[in-house]
Length: 312
Image (cartoon, rainbow, N blue to C red; front, top):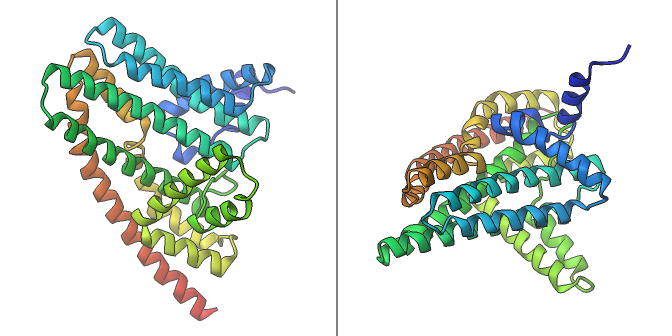
């Protein structure tokens, strides 16, 4: 007896998740289904995940440029391109998983593309706001918002990936340490092309940034790797899931979808400058709170792991 088409479709979409726990609502019910359709289409065209990433990056950069204009019709075209960029950003990873071509280099290229998209958005919004009110304070406001965005995004990605490492059985995790990336970079630096060297240098900086933001979580990972050699025991997995799981939905608010929806609303009412304030005040307050909660949890779990070692 065959399964209904919808059931097959749902199971196929689910097969391209990292893990359901870390998927946002908009991703689950909108971007992932669309991304799968796109991934299957690109698979037939024999496109590589990197090519899809590039296409998505171009859409996002152009969307950022269209936000510069004080014309709602042009802004709406930018929003459509922005949604396309996000759909392609989902599709590249889903294509990599479908074709079993997931690589660290692919994750690095994807991260660089995401940063270029939001750099375009921030620069063009800043220019638009500056033309409306030519004050140097606009540049400082935008710079502070951009730095906050980068830190929040790095931390959210790190904590979600660490959750997959500790709690999600069988999940795909692209969790790298700065020491591991540095070691790989040094081994291959003699015969790498300049472009590959640049990508690894950027990724090394990104992993360092994540570990600086979460020192106790890094130490917990190191302790777990030393004690369990990457095979997380069931009791630790369950404990981590219970403690960190409730915070995942809040980390989700610091990811792309929340910013995108708020930006769209502000563009529709013609007040994009408040996007910077949204980034600086409510998202930073949430960011600081989550860092405190996660680091406190990681420190307590280190003590539990150390006691387990002493008793073993």
